[in-house]
Length: 254
Image (cartoon, rainbow, N blue to C red; front, side, top):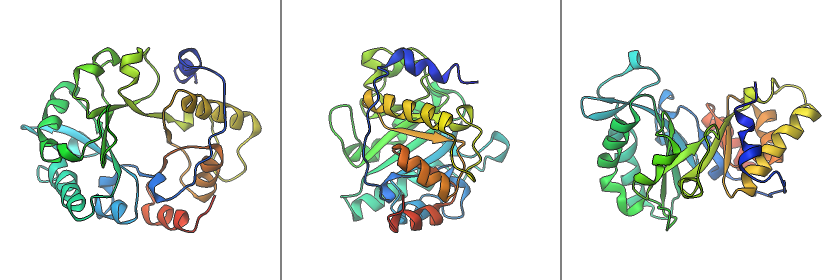
């Protein structure tokens, strides 16, 4: 079950090291953010450092939806995320945030549309040269790594480590995201077993050794899991429970 994930051990050094992180709400990632009753605003007001939206290209715009049959034309990336984000940054230019755009189909067209829709935000976008307010990360259906450098410097990619990546393409990787349930069947209720903990810790440390941040998806979504991930050094803690994780992190839990 883990063969694809373990490409990491061939790609980067297996020399592990401990990375200490002072966790705040900036380490929180709102998974499938658009499914909550206040897309963008609930996570942003909780101080989350990362927000995720799934998109489909529809009639020349990017629509936000979990599946194709749930698309609503008025729920666009521009209206739900890009416009509120721009207004929020004008009000508070000190804020830093990652916007993870999970492309559900047709990466070529979706990225073409995204580049156009990002135009009003260009002065706030991080590039391979400068870290700024907003880091755009492309997940889901992505071009092959050899095409990463063909995109503007403000377009970064979320890597699942399944495909070989050249040094130049690796510079365009802004985050590594892996499915936790392919590494462990842990239910988040009991303590994570020693064997699974060793595997997960080694992957985390190896990604850090390669100079990248890491998050897991399909991990248990409760306080035990959040605490365990933080103790292991996961950079972004994903959740569907925005208010709960926000409160947990504000209390300084670990």
